[in-house]
Image (tube, rainbow, N blue to C red; front, top):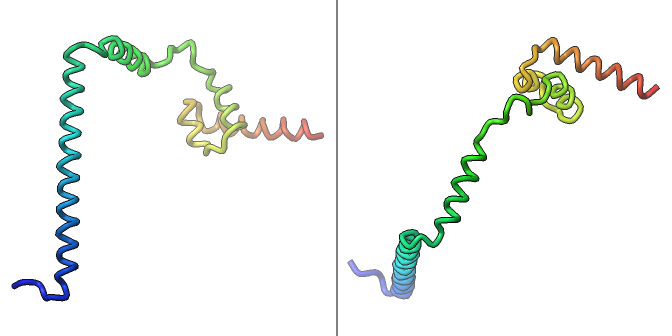
Length: 119
């Protein structure tokens, strides 16, 4: 059943938009394919071999775990976390490996020190 005469202009506009959209998508896919082909050709020629090697070397270095002598003392770490953050005590316990009692004791000592400094 053909569209009603009053719907003809709307139908034509929708068809024109659909055709434009389709052509745009086709052009976009062609551009992506051309870019990928150029990229593969550049890799085959070895144009970026030095950059890729440097990136691999850097990426390998990013995932190294810090050596144990570079780790902060747990009490000092907990003290800094208590002074500089608003982390919950459980999170500080998890990060430092101390017991809840050690962290709570440290927090209370920091409160006493703060009161003494004010007076």
